[in-house]
Length: 133
Length: 378
Image 1 (cartoon, each protein chain N blue to C red):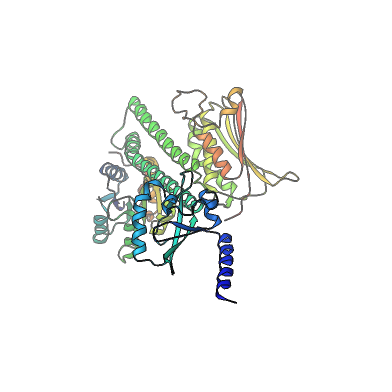
Image 2: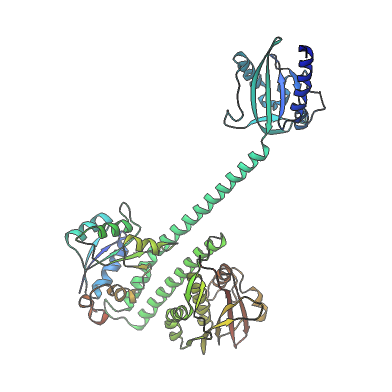
């Protein structure tokens, strides 16, 4: 079980990520913009950060740069999840400091196992199974 | 040498210099009457030699500017000074004998003589330059339009993918049984939502690529590509689809050359598309991917990648249209595509310097062969 921070400005997509991550037994905190995401990452450092890219004011790229620039958070694995797919997004995502990029729409069956690769083994869900309610 | 002779010689020399000058030159007096014009004036404006002498300079000005020109001229003559070409910033306009108008630049210099002050005007036709500037401006506008279209497509893609994320995501999650198990009918309906969503996604991606290819904005970025690895990746991406239909999806590398300098993304996209098609149109049997090295004498070495299926095949009459945009063999079939995929593959193949050829027999199967040369790493 890991503590995962999700930064996503579209409510319905935030709901999806939270429901999906919780189904695997993770504890999720959520933020609806870059600023509160950064505050949350600083005040209560999670085990992993999932962030959208296109957000007003502080976008996902800037979130990654600031997380990487801060001593307390620079070690946290970061996954970009975005509907931005054109051109050189992969390179820009890496340059900003993300560890991995997943395009929207996500594949719900493989999403959590895919992001868990960036967690230490002991924080992954037991054999990657869904906890059915 | 006496003074009179000296002036006479100077006149003749000046006349010959002026007639040989590249620009049109006129001299006007205080009333704006033309006292002298060189040969270029007659050529440029279309007058018989000497026909302009004694006319007011306004005959060389377009009709709609004549009134204001006379005013400007009197203003200039009250305080004459040298004015270089282009000092007004924008081109001026002149009128030929036949009334046609063309852009010019004009320099003015006052000449003081015992008979009063004259003005010498040098006139240069700048049509060619103005037309080039116009073309450059036009090009800029086109580039800006293309960039705006790019931005529009990218933002449409983003906006469409965002709700699709929730549609497909929740439909899948329900099937995963996270919130309780479902009966068979519910599962089937959710599968339909998920399939439709994924199909919509595929269309959005293809339309985006089509827009980019059509405008020539996809260019190959050659790099050494491990062909075995790439084919394995494609197979792993499509294996679930083949498995679901009970098809054997196999690959074979028939050459020692394992790396080939080409564009990884375009090649992957072509192979995914060809394999996806093969699986879609095959109900039983297999889909085989084969990589061959073609090295015939006197020909540049090419890599040939074949995708061969045991599917329904293509009717002979349709063979020459299958790469056409929006071509569908049986329109109206659920999720059989709108005819972008193969067209896009062929366009991408040409980005890689090659092409795709198809062979098919009804009820036996189809074989698509991509041949590409090795590109130079950029």
